[in-house]
Structures are given as structure tokens and as C-alpha cells.
Amino acid sequence: MNGKNQNSLAHWLQSRSERWVNLNQLVTKTSDGERDDPSHIRDLLDGFRGLAKDLSMARQTLSNSQLTRQLEALFTQTHDIIYRKAHHPWQDLLTIYKKEIPALVMDNMANVILITVTLFILSAVAGWTLVYANPELASLIASEQMINKVQQGELWTDGLLNIVPSSVLSIKIMTNNIIVSFFAFVLGALYGVGTLYIISMNGLMLGGVFAFTSHYGMGERLFKFVIAHGVVELSIICLAGAAGVRLGEALIRPGNRNRGAAFRDAVSQAGKLMFVVVPFLIGAGLIEGYISPNDDYPLTSRVVIGICYGILLWAALSGKIWEWRRYSQQ
Amino acid sequence: MTITYDDSLEISSAGGVVINLPIAGLGSRSYAFVIDWHIRALLAFAWFILVVFIFRLVSGSVGEFFKLDSSAWNTIGYFGMLPAFVIYFLYHPILEITMKGRTPGKRMAGVRIVSITGGTPTLGALLTRNLFRLIDCLPNFYLIGIASCFLTKKQVRIGDIAAHTLLVHEEKMRDKSIQFITEASRESVLNHNQIEVLQDLLDRWNQLQRKARITLARQLLANAEQPLPDNALSEGQQDKILHASLKALSKEAQS
Image (cartoon, rainbow over all chains, first blue to last red; front, side):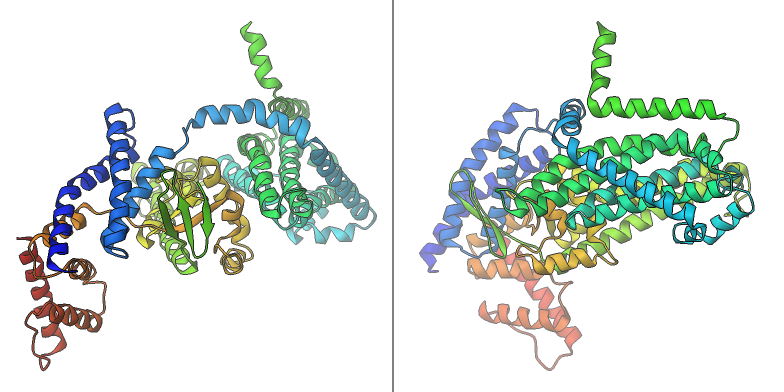
């Protein structure tokens, strides 16, 4: 670069640098949430237009320089702010609960949910049949400690609150259940095989454990422990499994899209069910920590709690919960 | 807006300006993750210890720190364990949402999550990306995620494929840097390229190895026809003199 060019460049830099610095400060302010001031937005748009021209100039005269890279960074940030879609998280969340989840459950995914529930029931029946006929198979689904307790006429849930307090128990259970449900969903990315494994294993275990406890005459006691939280907990695992099966289906039968696009669509559609999974599993965890192991609650109240919580889940999934609210306001 | 890939994400903006965002590879990903893992593990542990300590202080039994009975665990379960779990497991989604695709670790590694169009990812995309960590981290040490990065053209893990996001290197405009280049370009013995190299070298002085920075500083000062320290001097002495010379040159350029 000769002396004349050097001087022109210096002059150009002098005339522009203040604008770039001002625009950079404006971008930082806007990114930090100061978006309401209309003068900011106007200045941002003006600055962006000027920056586009300056960037072209910088690329011609100073390609691969630090200055050009920094102007590109500023351009990208400003572009992102200007062209970003409007963001209404609460409204979007409400739409998911009110419209999208009921549409998914009652229409788009009804068949997949039915298939998953059927698989779960069949696995439970298979688990029951196998373990009831051969109680020694219980060692495949239960720990040695659990088996020993049952053989001594006790359930592993007996006196649970003397060992672990309800709060810790609830936290452990809800964390575990949420992780299992998330796994049931995301393992669908392995062409659905991972999800099918989780659903059938959970069914096998449930059926097997009931068969084993029944063999020792404690099936009713286990039912008493499970009923309050189990209705929702098992439904939710099936629901998460159905979402996972949807992912597998998209990968196996992508239709007229490529696999990537079909997978992404399935994730964004079926993934919305996770907004139901989390809150209901938190509730189920609290019931399992505070009510299920507490002998003060008789069977009747446990059945009522289980059924009511199940109805609440069904109402949320079908969208009826919002209609009830509308009726009560009329 | 049109998008193409190679080892960078090319975005054509509405005004016709084309920007290339270099895609971050496995190294930068891992570096950012390791930093973040340490931060979240330490934060979660520190919170738990703080709650146990406060509980002990209130109950007047600091000596028996971890000997907790059932009722003590009840309180600590809610105030100690639950927030610690939240910090550890929700660190990535919460920070990525509030910091628009960044975390402290990503910031230190100079990377950022962007949507496939180059912009800030949506809330749903960031939640999805984090949900799929469960599969990326299988069977251990993120093996599936690492394999996915190796096998995909855009070096993405399954979470990124699901959420339609990418990890790119991020450069930020620094006001100081622009002001320095502008000031220095007015009347300086250095040309524009040399000014940029000088500024870059001073910025990264402490990160460079001593031998490397001595070589670079010598080359820069020789090009600018500035006096050089004697080669016979020890490396430590040369290092100090060269650093002082560069600083003096930088001041002179801005004066």
C-alpha cells in the first residue's frame, strides 16, 4: 500500500470508526434487553445500512484483516437483532398446552400412542405370565435384596419413610422418572429401537414384580403402594415412549422428505409432549414420596387420588381442561 | 437468505452481503464443555455445602457436619439437594437461553450456538438440543456425540441435528481495537497490516510461548526498521526488552 492509499485509508477509518463504535454499543444495549426505545431501533437500522457499505469497502481494501473480521462480527450481530423473529415465550407455551398438545394426542399421534400403550400392556402381561409360572425369573428384574425381603413377607417399600425422608424420596423419584421419560423419547433417534426397549422393559418389570409379589401373597399391598402415583407415572412413560416411536418412524419412513428433515419435524412436533411429561411427573413424584409409602392413607383414598390425577392428565392431554375453565367462567 | 456449508456456514443476508461463520470442531466443543462441566459441578457442590453449613450454624452443631438425621435431610433435601440438582442439570439450557446460545465455557472457547440461518436459536431449539444430550453422552464420555461430530459434514452432535443448530466460532468487535487501529493509521511508521499485527501481538502476549513471541516481535520490529535487542542476551531479557519496544511503538503510533 503506497503513502497516498495509506492516507486515504486513514481518512476513511477516521470518518467511520466512531459510527462503528456507537453501533457496537447500541447492539450491546439492545442485546441486553433495552429494545423498547424507538430511537435505538432507528439508529440501529441506520447504522446497519451504513455498516453494510463499510464492510464491502473494508473487504475490497483490507481483505483478511482484523478490522474486516471485526466489522463482519458486528454485521452478523446487528443482522441477528434486526431479523430475529418476535419472541413471546408465554404465549407460545400457552398455545402448546391449549392447541398443539391436544391436536397431537387426539389426532396426529393417536395411533402411535395406542401402539405404545398396547406394547406396554403386552410386555406387562408377558412379564406377569413368565414370573408367575417361574418365580425364580424374578432375579432378572429385581435385586437380591428386594427378592429376599419379599420372601420374608415384606415389601421393599415397607418402612421406606424411616430410611429416606419424603422430600429426598420425592426428589429422587421425580428426577429418575423424568430422566427415564426423556430417555424413552430421545432413544427414538436410534430408529425407535431404544424406545421400544425402554417401554417393553418397563412393562416386563411391572408385570414381573406384580407376579412375584402375588406369588408370596403381597400383590394387593404392592397395588396399594402403586395406585396413587402409578396411573399417571405409567401413562407418562407410555406418552414419552410414543414420542420416541414417532422419531423412529420418521427415520424409517421419512416420506417425501429426506431423513434429516423428517427427523427434525418429528422432534419439534412430538417433543412438545415433554411439556406435559415434566409437570405431571413432578406431581407423581410428590405423591410417591409423601402418600404412597405413608400407611396412614387407606386404599380408598389412594385409588381416588390415582383416578383424579389420571383424569387431570387426560383433561390436559385432550384440551378439556381449558374448556372446563371456560365453562366455569360462563 | 441462502445458506451453504463447507467448513463454514455461509449466510447471504437480505442486503446481499455474504458472511462466513467458521464451524467449530470437536476441539473447541470439548474445551467449552470441560470448562462448563467444572463450573456447574463446583457451583452445585458449593451450594449444597453452603446449605449444610447454614443449617449446622442455625442448629448449633457445626462439628458434626455430615451427620444428619431424617428431619435434617428433609430440610436439606429441599434447600440443598434440589437447587444443586437444578444447577447441575439445568446449567446448559438456562444459560444458553439467557446468554443467547452461549455459556461461560463457550464464551471462553470463543464459540456460540447459532440456528441454521446463522441467528440466535429459538427457545425450543435450545431445549431440544439439551434434551438430546442424553443420547449424545451414551454410553459414556459423550461417545455417540463425538462419533456424530466425526461422521457429519457440519461436525454436529445428534442434539444439533434434532434442533437444527450449529456451533460456530464467534468474533466480537472490540471498541478498543477499532479505536487503536484508527488512531495508529493516522501518522505512523507502521502500515495498516503492521498495526494490526502489533495490536494482535500485544493482546496475545501472555498467551504465546516465550520463544514464539520473541520471534514474532523481532520480525515485526525488523520490518518496521526499529532497533532490536542483542541476540546474546538471555531469552528473559530479550522478552522484556521486546515487549517494552512493542508497547513504545504502540504508544507512538497512537500519539
